[in-house]
Image 1 (cartoon, rainbow, N blue to C red):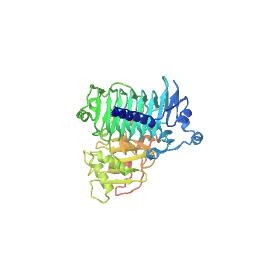
Image 2 (image 1 turned 30 degrees about the vertical axis):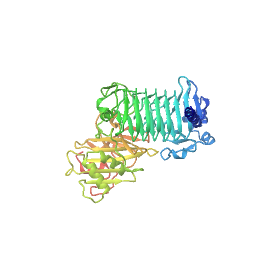
Image 3 (image 1 turned 90 degrees about the horizontal axis):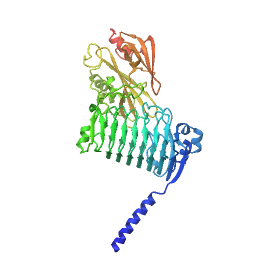
Length: 514
């Protein structure tokens, strides 16, 4: 009997300790963005009224209100969870086209919708709806969360960094966010009876997470790159989940052990990704069906083509994206990342010549303009390989927060050019292909020439490269097409024996038959 009393006392102490570690929550009902911001506290249950749509952007962009509420900028690219272990903060980060709410260090916080129709939305395409930095025991329940416009490069729905004990229940996370959930160094996350749909880049990214479960979730009509990305994570499980009507490589799991129990998957069999590895883990599949890549669904106009429409050359980049070898990269770093993935001797020899000046390489033209972010490597008619490119040029555009768009233009043996675009994500330092087709607005083929300075890509007459047909100009968030019918533009300054300074000069001087 004494032993039994001791056991009961220990159990009671354990239960009391659990309650002591989880104080009761105060319930606050809100119907405005300012009300939501003011209600953000630890040990708080925030209830958004039924049918209320909270637009965060105007309120978090109000400098006077932010100053009054002590809401300061938190750079989410530099910030870590450590400073918020003992303090809390509400902040914002200006993500190029608008501010993103940052919630730092809160514990025992619930945000939930009352009844139907409670939602939180933002307008900046580069911002997450909610970005949690640190914190513990965070619950999001019965909410609709999304953007007013489609994300171009970045800006998912939810992001958690260094957060512990996350619960997402009965939530609808929709595009046009680039991904539904991003999580880094998160421990104990459970997503139940929720939806991730219509996201423009992927479904989720789990990086260095532990014990993550998705139960009875529906993932559909997401695109375009690797959709489920899991790296360095343990204890990830999908149970009773459905994947359907998605487009792009489905799984990029990188050798991690991931459990799938009674999941339904319908996808193009050539784009399933790491399926064989998943099956090797002993996962139990309820139903895996393969469908054709073109399922007839309309995903909307966003100047992005399907992989089938674009000959983007490096066909395995969706599953194995190259790492850029610098935290603050320049054009040489981007070109080196391309070289690691390319099968072109010209590109590989070009980066060797750039990194080892004076070394013997089979490249005639090597020019690097680090200040303006431009590279061209090429071969003369006498030395170029008929099975390789004649020339390759590359440039990039900065977008804020360390994000970049990288362009690589290939002059092919048949005197055509193929232009590829890549997105650089500074959080992962990876390049990912962007399916952008500048030639949608023209019936005839063109020759591309990247800018050594400025932001306009020239589109040239393939028979007379001295004639510019149109331009394709990047304004920091999207490309704009404009017909011109003017003379092509060349830098016109000699910097090597061939006097080459850009693609236009290269073609005119070494391949005058154009």
